[in-house]
Length: 445
Ligand code: DOR
Ligand code: ZN
Image 1 (tube, helix red, strand yellow):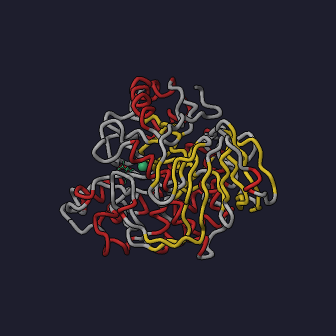
Image 2: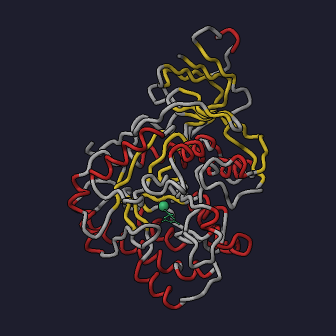
C-alpha cells in the first residue's frame, strides 16, 4: 500500500514548507515541494490524504516512559500506553526499567521484550536498570537504548547512591547513561526532618532543589573526568540547568531533557491537585518553571520527554505518605507544546527539534526523527487551530486521569502514522498494527 499525504505544511527543525510526503512499504520514499492535485493522484492502491491547512510533523519520540510491564499491569500496559502515545502524536517510546521484576539483566530484558512485542502499537526501546552491583552484567547487555541510573530512590527499588559505582558505569560500560539526578542522602535527611507531615507540598521540601543540584554536580564531575556521554532526564530547577549550561560549553557529550509537568505546573499547584501532582523530581517554584522555559529558548534543553508514570487514581488520592509519585504524560506532551506555539512561546520548528529530531539524534535512534526520503514513515498530522478541552473520557492510558483535565488546549494531532500505517484518527479511532523495536547507532546489538 502506498500513501500520499499532500498539500500539508511539512515541519522540519529549520523550516516549514508546503509539500507532499510519499510513502511506500513503511518508508518515506519522496518529499515534494509545493501543492499537488489530490484528486488526480487517486488510484486503487494509493491512499491520498489531503492535509490542506494542516501540519505534517515527524512522529514524536518520548525517551522516558513507564509502561509498567511486567508487574505493573494494574497501572498501565502496552495496549493502553500505545493508544495514549498514538493519540498524542508519539510514535516511538523508550521504556524505563523500574518494573517488577526490574530490567537489570539480559535475561529479564529478553523476557520483557517478548511480552511487549505482542502488544506495542508504537515503536519501542528499553533501558537496562543500574544497581549497586550489576555493572558487569549491564556492560554485556545488548539491544538497549541505554542504562537508567537512579541516583535517588523513586518508584521501585533501583538505586545507585555510591559515586564509585556511578563511575564504574561510566568507565566499564559503553551504553548511554540516563540519570535521575537527586542525591539520596540529601532526600533521606529531609525525610527525617519532615517525618509525619501530610501536606503534599512537603514533597518539594523533602526533595528540595539542593538535592537535585548536588547529584548533578557529582555526575558532571565524573562525566567530565572521563569525557563520558551522559543524559540528565527531568531536569527541574534553574540551579541544575545552570550547572549543565556551564558544563555543555566544552562538552557536547552532555545532554538533558525537561518534562511537560515541570514546564506547565509549579509548586503552587499542590493547592489544587494535592497528591495527584506528587512526582519525582517534585514540582518546583514558578521561578524555576520560568528558568526551564529560558533553557528551552537558549538551547540548553535538548529535548522534552514525559516521564509518563501512570498510577491509578485511587492510589494517587491517598494521603501524602501513601500516594505514589508520578503522573501520566505521553498523550498530552504535544498538545501542550502546540498550545504554546499558538501562544507565541515556541515555534513549530522548535517543537520538532525538541520532540523528534533531537531525541533521534542524541539517542542514536536509526531511521527516525525527520520527514525525509529514506526515513521510516512515522509522522503525525496536526490541526493547529483545533481548540479542545482535555477530557479524561479521551485519555487512553490506564491511568485515566490527568492534572491537565479541563484545560483548553489549541493544537492537536489529528492523525498518527507508524511505519506508513494510519494508526490513529481524531478523536477516538485506532487501527490495529504493531510497532517495531528500535535500533540504536553505536549500541552493541
Ligand atoms: O515520579 C516518578 N515516578 N518518578 C520516578 O522517577 C519514577 C516514576 C514511577 O515509575 O512511578
Ligand atoms: Zn521516570
